[in-house]
Length: 318
Image (cartoon, rainbow, N blue to C red; front, side, top):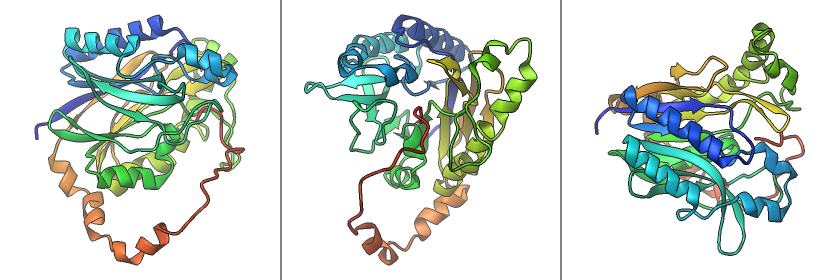
């Protein structure tokens, strides 16, 4: 297993404008390739846009959705991969033959879709169906997994994906700058602050780095990487979509929970890091997985439980 250089992107997508979003994906992927990146990861629904779906009817949502792997945008990403010579991960709304719609994130190389994953805990629209399977896949000799946004907040999802062999976990998000009743000090960030970012960058940075933004991420994101002994590739949009602001902070963490690189500005950009195999067995998470005593809690996790999730306290764009 050889070192692997990955780019994690933040960019301001446009709602429903796939042509524009794909052009940004192409531009940033091409730039990352010049820096030696072998893989590039974009945020949740980076092709289609995300937040605007909260106002769409089922018919309208179907219109912006595509089949995977045969959809036009998916095939376009395969062409990008072939032309640039880089593996690309991105997301959109997927529809199946029964007109069910999913929040889907997928990975392509120069010939095909390597893997696709449907969000297990979908929000933003009542018309989205939940995914029912974890996914792991070969990524240039590494084993990778995918969990989308809130899926990563349910800690068992991350542990399960790690137990399935994931060494790198891609965590595409649309999150931050949202009021969370369970976290004091959080609030919605005004779009006016984003629009005025050049004249008053300090106020916006305080919001992006504060309890509603990066400070919230730091409560849990390093722990997911550390506890499971994985590289975590976190991606998140920057800027405004459908009246909501998102704080970026795309970053890559190592199995020690350390941030290897992070996007810190307000521009469309990416951070990069090299994943090295030696860290996987050096990290505490590797030892923790091997020290588990499953017999002590097997009966607990097999007990019937309610599958109903009260999401009234959740931001609509988790």
